[in-house]
Image (tube, rainbow, N blue to C red; front, side, top):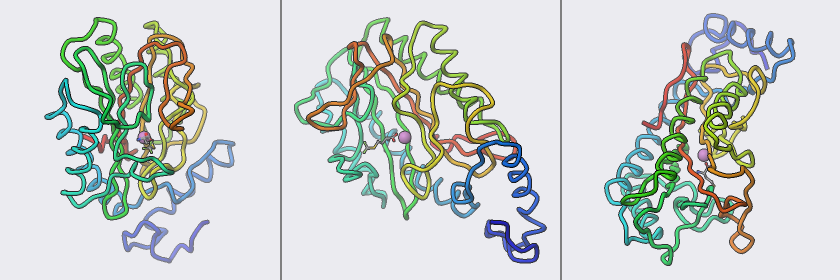
Length: 289
Ligand code: MF3
Ligand code: CO
């Protein structure tokens, strides 16, 4: 685990380990000895890896912007998928969902009472009043990025509009918790408190995740939880925060036929926003902007 003091640092800086990340590694070790869950080296990204992940995220953000310029009533969720595939491949990248564990399409499109992982379909047509999450993930030069946004089709109800807004605030509140030497549990605690105070519930079956060299890495980022619990956050970690918030109860079920689409158990509305976050020396950076 620890490397020799005089060897070149693992981060690729070219400096000697003792002049570079040795103190950093020792600090993590101290936390571990005090009983904290600490990140493995492989989920702490080097500056080179961070650059590559950011390049991937630039394409991913471009895809979401492209969707937002084109989404409208009357189009199918399959049409959204086509936009995602076109933009991604024209920009030298691969849609990460395509063929991921058997997922058949290039993005996830989750409407109204669908919580996440909706499969684009030519028979699902967007109509006035729908709320839809489009979740887009990109592989560029082997590096992964992931983000999602909500779209309101035409005019919707006050209930749906408010849900979309509060869910976005939940994401922002979660991001505000991200700083080095804090804990992953701080994120879920803040989101849960904010959502529940306003009468909403937080989905617990899915969460955010580490990402970069793979689509889903450690840690699991729960959107509920307790402060000062869970993995220690350290500079160089990259993970998503992607709260799914329901107007009704938090329980969800997964479609038995397709094995993916998840719905609220009680049929209530669900919304989700997702950003990809880098922990920095003095806080965090949203790399999916
Ligand atoms: N973007 C989703 C996530 O947040 C991806 C789910 S896997 C897929 O993890 F195959 F459905 F795309
Ligand atoms: Co994700």
